[in-house]
Length: 373
Image (cartoon, rainbow, N blue to C red; front, side):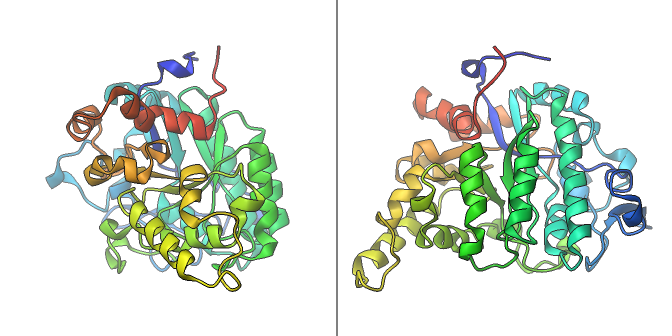
């Protein structure tokens, strides 16, 4: 295992991804679920995941196209053509080296992960699929927990179940955060029933994240989606407003919430508007929170971006300590293996201490930096 001190980390991707192997669920769920487990099948166009409840087979060409010339990219590919670092941790560490990345924080393939949390009609099946993924990810990261940090998925079929899964995965050395596809009670509306999850996340020191958006519908062919990747921040203001106005950060001041792959440029606008509405509201009827809403952006809420030059220019309005760079590797939004070229262009003129904070220091602080001596 490569041992590093936290000060040696110069480039940390706060949002990268795995490519789930074909046998992940069929080999790991209880025998009674094997016929229903997420599985990969071959179609005329290429290979795709077939998941119970999904509208369409879920292809993954865009989720493994980093480094390919634009004219060679396609939504449909064969599994044998997927770069091995998506599912082989030894290969992944080598791919990190090609890009000059010291550490990656790893999330699932979005439409696959979202389908797991959206489909919850059978709670036991839902939990079995999520646990199978979390166990696989923990094993992947255990290969080198100084270079591979995993974000586990939380079930959303009841708070007690989510708390139990968070406590379970917190014991794994490679798991450094947890993500939600809906609030733990299963709704899109935050309720008091969700509070034990926030308390546990703060207690065990696992940042709580939402990747792009809540899963509000069954997943399908990405080409049929109404919103494109350039609109990926559309859901996050709702979740942040719910957390702030729901008093979550007052009750759990140590909780860290991460808006992942939604970029950072829009944060100043949201906090300005929330502060303005709060100031104008009658104290008897406005949200019963201890501080003006914008204050929570400085202490409890952070964001990740892939390319956000406008956000870097306006970093002092966003909060230098609350921004984290991500490579998005191996997805098509990544500049692998030339991430440093893009970074140098976007960070031209940024002081070294601020550059290091956004490119490494903030992620190490938020996700925890108990690294090998």
